[in-house]
Each structure stands twice: as structure tokens, then as C-alpha cells.
Amino acid sequence: MRPNILRIDPGDIDDVLIGQAAREIQSGGLVAFPTETVYGLGANAMDQEAVAGIFEAKKRPLDDPLIVHIANRDDLSWLVEEVPDEAKKLIDRFWPGPLTLILKKTDRVPDIVTTGLSTVAVRMPSNDIAKRLIKASGCPVAAPSANLFGRPSPTTAQHVIDDLNGSVDIVLDGGKTDIGVESTVVEIVSGKVIVLRPGGIDVEELRSVVGMICVYTEKEVITKSPGKYPQHYSPLAEVVIVDDDPQQVEKVLLEAHEASGRGLSVGVMAKEEHALEYEGFHCKVLGPSIDARACASELFHVLREFDKDDVDLIIAEAIPEAGIGLAVMNRLKKAAGIGT
Ligand code: TXA
Ligand code: MG
Picture 1 (spheres, rainbow, N blue to C red):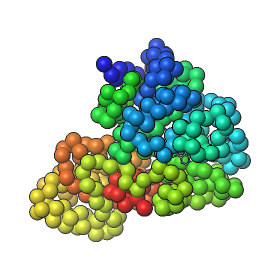
Picture 2 (tube, protein in one colour):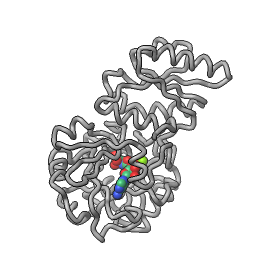
Picture 3 (cartoon, rainbow, N blue to C red):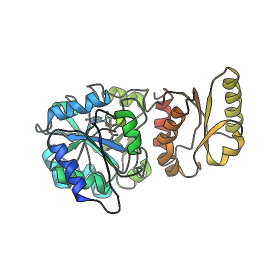
């Protein structure tokens, strides 16, 4: 009977339940747990068989490396050879939190975790349930997002169950995640900070701590980071994006009428301020366009909800790419298959 779903109150974390999940990790099992970004699918990073189970459960290609999660900064020296100055500054400011650093790995990190790369991705989450689980497990926890490969990342325990029922041992249900898009992934090359994936920490925040920042285009990321695919985070429905400009509503309506005319079941993912314009259409609100954080926290949930409603085509209004809006649009473009 899998999975065992354990409800945990984030405001009053039950150590007995954390202990049960930690023992599952120690004995080679798979535990889905909330982080501040999305739910992760965790296993003991030092246990190659357990890590292989992550790839199998997610149907994830074996060339897509995992993030290793730690609960103490001191654990980093065990995993990586060196921590460049720029990385130290980022860690001081953003850990624990939604920032993943790519650093040169030690031989202790199994190749299956990094898919044979000489670097390892490390992050210290700020979510208390995640922190307590990693501490109690007593090992670094390898965890990708707890969705089937290619699907929108899970922001609730139900999303995890919808995708991975039957292939995960325990799901820690700590409610809806806070940020809603994944961590920012950066690497440091000759003192320059390179953003490989925009995420929960935005570029402006990074810039407040380190001088030289470069955001890679998806083409550059794909050549750089194996396992990166232009189509990702996809609902079953087709997604088209309508640019963020003054004619946005008219363009959405044109597209929606045309697709309905072809017999398609259409969903409109709208900015809050435009929602009333789409009366008569199946419309879901992403959030106010001035509040990219609100939009980030709803994005994956709304994409999944449209699937539940059997929509054929999602017409999505683009939001400004400022702040975390950059991460929202990055995920939305991948959902639309125009990630490059
Ligand atoms: O917020 C998050 O980061 C969530 C939570 C669970 O922590 N995790 C997550 O993991 O999003 P995942 O596996 O879905 O995405 C990790 C990304 C992948 O796209 C992978 O290609 C990249 O990090 N990555 C991992 N190791 C890498 C490495 N050594 N070099 C370059 N990219 C790497
Ligand atoms: Mg993922």
C-alpha cells in the first residue's frame, strides 16, 4: 500500500512523523516533502540504489542531474572541493533559501547523482519540514521536483500523489508551497555568477550581493547542462502565450474565438486585471501582473487544473519578466515548448 501520506502542520511540526520519514530515507526509500519552492522527491544521496529509484519513479532521463539538499552549511565541505568567494557571498545572503549552487564535487558524491558530471548542485532549503527531515535523516538528500518528468512541478501533496502514486513510499503533506517555482540555479566561472535557471531568488537580488551576473539563454543552458530540455513543465493541453502588450486582451480573444470555432476546448490563463474581459470563456486567474510572486505561486497549480478540466488549448497571458516574473515566464515558455 503506497504511498503513506503523513500530514504535518508546518506551524507545529511533529517529530514522530519526521522520524518515520527519516527512517524511510535511511533505509533506501523515497520520501516526497515540501520545500519553500516545490515538493521534492528525496532519497539518501549516498545510496546509489535509492537514487536510481528517484529516476525510475519520475521516469527521468539518466542524463539529468539531481540537486543535493543539506541542512547545515558545514555539510557543504563534505560534498564539494572548494567554495569560491562569490559562492560564499551568495550562501551568506541566501541560504537557507531557494538558491542552488553548482560546485566542483568530491569523490564522495556518487556519479548517479550528478550523472557523471564533475560538479554537483547543492541547496539548503528554508522550509522547516524539509530542514527537519534532512537533519533527522543524517545524510544529504538528493531531491528533484516530485513530479513525473516533463510535467508541471508539484506545489501540493495532491500534485505529488497525482503523478507518483505507487512509486513513492511516504508523502509528507505540509500544505501548499510558498514560492511555487523552483530554486534559482547558478554556477560560478572565473568569479562570474551565471544563472542557469531563473527561480525563487531573482536576478536583482543576486546582483545586490555579487557584481558580475550573466543570465544564460536556454540555448546556452542546454549545451552547458545536460538533461535540459526545451519542452518541460507541460500540462497535457497545448499552451500558447500571448505577449504582454497593450493589445493583449484583443489578441487572446481572437485566438480563443478561433480555437473554439475549430471545436477545441479552450482555457484562458489571465492576469487578474483582465479576468472579466474573458466572460464566456473558461478562465483561470494567475494573479495580478504587478505581483509576480503571487503569479509564481499559482502557475503550476493553474496548469494542472486546466488538465483536470480536459482543456485542449491553454491561452496564457504573458506577465512582465521583472523579478520572479522571469522565472514564471521561463517555465511558461517551456510549457509552451518554446524554451529556446
Ligand atoms: O527548488 C528546487 O530546486 C527543487 C526543490 C525540490 O529543491 N528541485 C528541483 O530539482 O527543481 P530538479 O531536479 O527538478 O531541477 C534541478 C535542475 C535540473 O534542471 C538540472 O539539470 C540542474 O538542476 N542541475 C543539477 N545538477 C547540475 C549540475 N551539476 N550542473 C548543471 N546543472 C545541474
Ligand atoms: Mg524538475
